[in-house]
Length: 457
Ligand SMILES: Cc1cc2nc3c(=O)[nH]c(=O)nc-3n(C[C@H](O)[C@H](O)[C@H](O)COP(=O)(O)OP(=O)(O)OC[C@H]3O[C@@H](n4cnc5c(N)ncnc54)[C@H](O)[C@@H]3O)c2cc1C
Image 1 (tube, helix red, strand yellow):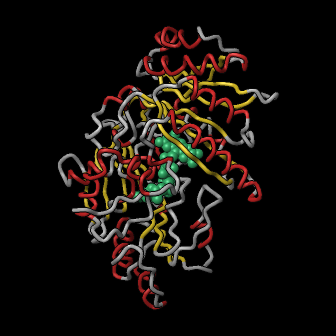
Image 2 (cartoon, protein in one colour):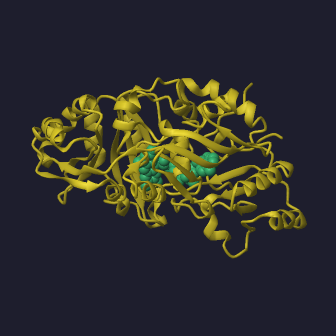
Image 3 (tube, protein in one colour):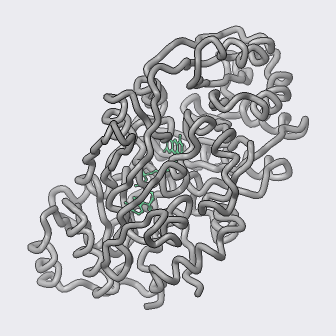
């Protein structure tokens, strides 16, 4: 099947056959539950798949995938529905809504958790934290574990324990031929490599098995600096970020004070001994913050501390790229666009990737961006559709102006609908190997509603 072929119209009796074979639910346009199921975090996304299946288990996923293949329907997959590009919902074809598969089981003795593909970060963190354990995830608790893990997963433990994908011990996955496979270090090893950074290209993951680490109380909070020193601190921060210990993971941001002056702040999470933290944070404190609130906190509580900044129902448009250094020219651009930020709900983030996450060899997993660096996130967020042009325009102009200073790579999980070249930049030197794995497990490109890798044998 050519992947551009439009979906044929579906015979209702054929759809009824699938519906009656499922343990979960099936929705067609007009059914109660259809609109709720196709809704995602980004209110800009309003797509109407031909059929939605909300599977109850891996058996349902096999049935739905087989049905889609036999009826020439492309498959889109919604884990937590948080991805801003909105690929979880296809404009046509069959959509799988994994929200009915949130079960998490923890084996505290072996330090392993098995989580269903519809679990949110909060579901997994809650189950593991009950045992004083955690696996590295992201920083907003309503994000889905599936999309986050398959693309990489950068969060507050990346320096100490790596990315979410680095902690995947195995995954069960339904491939385009309808088989349920286990991908692990000794089964389907090419698939195991590909799903750790290659996104949702290779099939429908039904569950992930994660390695857990003891994580109890952390030191967490934020420091921010006087507006008149923003330029100076922006110039000094990258050096501190590049040399800080693995126990410290940071996420910096640029906002504006009430007079509209750009202000630099750093969110931190220290997951080591509290005495050592004093020493590790001293160079940052020597930069002279005027707000310094860093306190002992339960890791599980800190994991949802940023949720308030991302309420549901808003419109989002993101642009992003990695950088290692901030030159004077780059800082000029950052300060200009921070001052022109169209609303206080929008943001400029700099999420740090370092330590264990940066030391994994770039070809060891499909996630290629392995060096100490930060990701610049231009996050436009607004409530009223009439404001779309202004917010999108700001983000695009900002991103263009940053191009001379950006690294070539981009994080696949923060990529929008930005074309083939940017998709290749997301997978970097691993693209060709991913294309070969895609050819082995999804030669017909059934799973193409994603940052797509074209199957190439
Ligand atoms: C507010 C916010 C905060 C974020 N914070 C972080 C962060 O701290 N760290 C970080 O790394 N990222 C972060 N992200 C990005 C996030 O990792 C991605 O948006 C991710 O794709 C979300 O996963 P999801 O399952 O919720 O997404 P969905 O939109 O449901 O899915 C995204 C894609 O993942 C694939 N997929 C989903 N489920 C499956 C499955 N079961 N099997 C196969 N493929 C599947 C599909 O290709 C789908 O199109 C954040 C995003 C938002 C909106």
